[in-house]
Image (cartoon, rainbow, N blue to C red; front, side, top):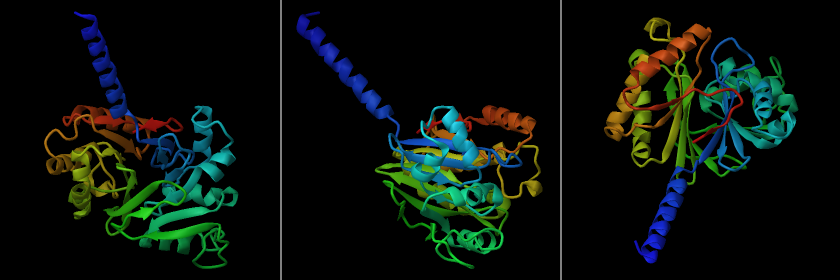
Length: 319
């Protein structure tokens, strides 16, 4: 091999390596503040999301805040105080539905929080205003609703299917309806930054049990983003193992139902489109033996080649 040929080969290898690193570069960072559904009040649904290499986080649901931030600081995800993360890093909240395990952290921490926006669909926002921030169960920290609004939070109602900028970030959100103990509504949030997306689902039952087409409509909307590899991952719940009877799901998923729904997504996006696709499993309900069973069942049923991720409280995930 000539000296020129060696130089050319080195240039090609370096260029390929740089291209590969660029391709693998993460677009989003997710910091789970709470990962469970159920009785552990220190570890309930809440996920910070921000573009990579920024501190511009929005919180997807807010069941647990303070305890989760403390865990993240312990894990050296954040190197500032709990108060600074709460007040300065979290730019707003996206609330999927108003069940307490998704909003209790927001309510309890509101006196210590800074001014920012709370985003929710109309039905969810009505419940927040009428039942929580109502000057009876809790002071009204919002800028509308009953009682005396203290105007710390701006309550912004999301129109379904409409792209909305998330204040003080470079991200936008589009909301989609979900069925959660029909006719109760939950929400899926499609987060966009530049040309990249992450999909977060609040609590949801399968279409077959909920007698709904809401998940089918959601999969139809995001299938092109799976095809183009712009969708970097999906956060979706699995609350119970397969042994849980359908009549006692209460608007949640099992491994069987999750895989059925993901088969439907793959059918729309194309065969093999979900191989190595990142699925982050949320809202696992205690006891621990049930969580272990869910993980075992998902592993054995994963014939789509999914990259299944189980988040840990206070440990960062890159997407």
